[in-house]
Image (cartoon, rainbow, N blue to C red; front, side):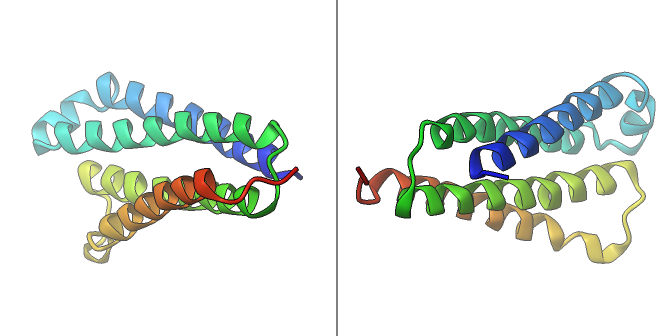
Length: 133
């Protein structure tokens, strides 16, 4: 599987899951989140989830244009970091907001945030990598 296909596959799964969790929070889980006073936490998770799914779509398009070499490798790392970061960051917030997370999940959120930040740094590094061709 190419880097662009991997990024687009991750974007598709993360995007679908982001829409589903957003809908769950707005409808089926609305009363639970209100009772737990965690609606804002859930919404933060959904926003970061969907923002990074969209970023992955853009990155997949850029990768599909044929950029290889150092830029392609860095962009591939950006995609990996955004995927892992979204799962850790948003996933831990969903679990905390819904009240199903064990206590050790709390530190997972900032770890996910670090992966998200690393992804953006890799994306910037891809932009300034020497051009091939």
